[in-house]
Image 1 (cartoon, rainbow, N blue to C red):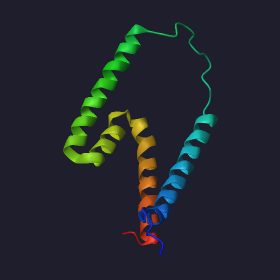
Image 2 (image 1 turned 120 degrees about the vertical axis):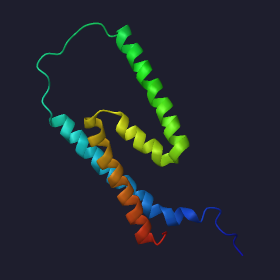
Image 3 (image 1 turned 180 degrees about the horizontal axis):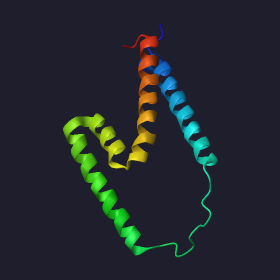
Image 4 (image 1 turned 45 degrees about the vertical axis):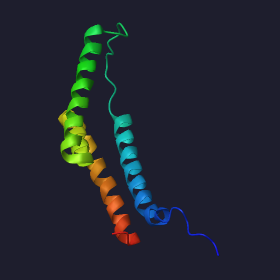
Length: 118
């Protein structure tokens, strides 16, 4: 008699994870193509590679994002973290992130429905 598999959930979750991965990979490829086709700026400002003011601003921004994401995670769990991450950026960032999240979730939930996991 063979022992039962220690991970029976692997087979049940394979299709949802594959569909989520394929959908997000396709969206990433779409964003990459869009970025490659974007016009290059005419003049690139050359200067110092390090600016203290920019580095401090980035450190403050990262600190604020970490505090806000910690608060959202404590209040709403992972959903709060995802929502906070997608909305803390500027509008262009949010418009780039949200469709990817929706496609990934649609792939995962659709795969779960097809596989009978739900």
